[in-house]
Length: 242
Image 1 (cartoon, rainbow, N blue to C red):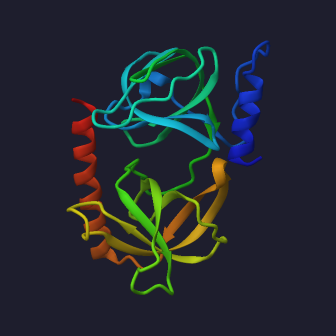
Image 2: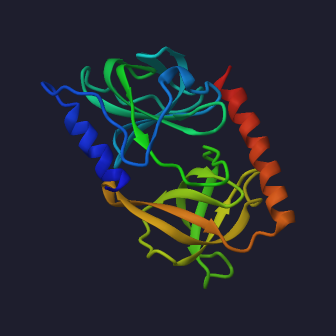
């Protein structure tokens, strides 16, 4: 069963009138409860895996309920229907993903409360830690040496071995690409990382999610990337913990 199919199955199980606690997939790992979420990392709230509703910061949490607030300077939240099922994705202190299924208890343009939380099980085979950062990014084919045809994409996470992005562009698995990421500095200071598509999945609204593997990043390049990642993570934490 794919991760997308698994999420959708769990949402159907959580529909009104249905009972039962999600069980781990064979070979999967049961995620930590809401209380393990790191307040210094963004929280993603999804209608399902194909539809991201908004990003926010964690204001409060316990084993059964969490409160997500608007990040200062970001757009307000869409108001969610009370009682509707949502997926919540964040990270723990060790940067391991935490996935939870719950119901909206209260929702405004600046705050959302989700209760009845249940952990979702899944596998995380990556050897390197993926950091949930969202700086400006673009993607283009390797034939575009001058990067003139770069298309905007949303960076979901990045590590010294690869990244995960969402874009409207359609690419096949194994397609060589170039990822531009503005980790530090202002416009015009983006770094370019040759990569190839190792995972592709459709998302709602004509978008696609891709797992990218960096293909020509030497030891020195990995070191610079890691320093940039740590710098922007510190800035993200400062913003989220105000």
